[in-house]
Length: 455
Image 1 (cartoon, rainbow, N blue to C red):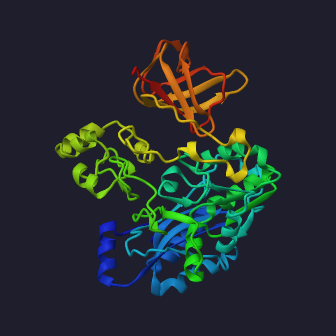
Image 2: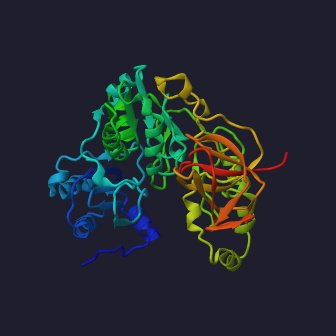
């Protein structure tokens, strides 16, 4: 019984080209109680492998989340494999706006603790008690309501290239960071505002809407089928698109064009651009935005350091990577001091909706100082007013001036008078150290720690 891929991605791509048949890129999800995710995973692999269906799928006790490439002539047979399960009867399949036969080249089905990592205890709320679903026309109408707050529940690198007009776009790297940030920002609007949310295909908002209803928000709405379904509906029905720019997708295409607007800029030169790429240095692979001119000049790398590295002999490159957790850097999408024009997630011009009380309009004031990123917040002990950070680069010493910055925290400058490093008092902390020190204000998981340099 085959429960693994027998072909490499290159071999699969060649077979797809030789077959010359159209394939459909699609996605779907379903929240349901699955007693035995591993057994469910094995059944799906056997059924889908027989149809030459490929993709990246996560299954858990809470349901299934799938992004796939399916032969067009096997589409109905593929749907039949879903209909076998009661919770997937009549399930909506979001077909991609742009098709690419090479969107996925392997069939990967992984068993996870959750299909959407949320950092929450699922026993605390009912994920099926979700918000009201809105179709494209209804969503557009609610966007026009001055009583509406619209929130983008995607990550910073997604919203940077495209989002709905007037949306709050948190500077977060994952879904679980956005829930507490948005919850705290909108505490004053639980009773009288419409909380309108969206994501790529709907799966994150399905959980977020249930979470915010559990938190006491009275009027919770979500875009049915996410941006993908919204795009299909506006094209079919001739509706004006309130989404501007490009929709980021998680296959090798990295984006689908929704409107001609280019709202982002090359992270290296600042020219209008919304094309994501991965750094060509195998020790980096940072995801960032790069225009064609910079791609040619920098040879598809994110920095001069990576450019120099790719020209070293291969054995030297391997030696440089030895012992390094280079995989961690892959997930710092667009977060690098080498990228001078990276500015997604800057909430200084965003207002809490059309919502709004004057004191909460300006979420973060930008402070123009010369600084370097040295770490990130990990925890805040509210009773003792102690903040905990992880030092990721450079050094920090007693007497240094630092800037703590975050979408809710704002920009706060403090001088380090005393620090504990890995549990012990010390004058200096270096890369990899966990530090704690007193702070009179709360920090959040998404907050960054910068060292302010002398002008």
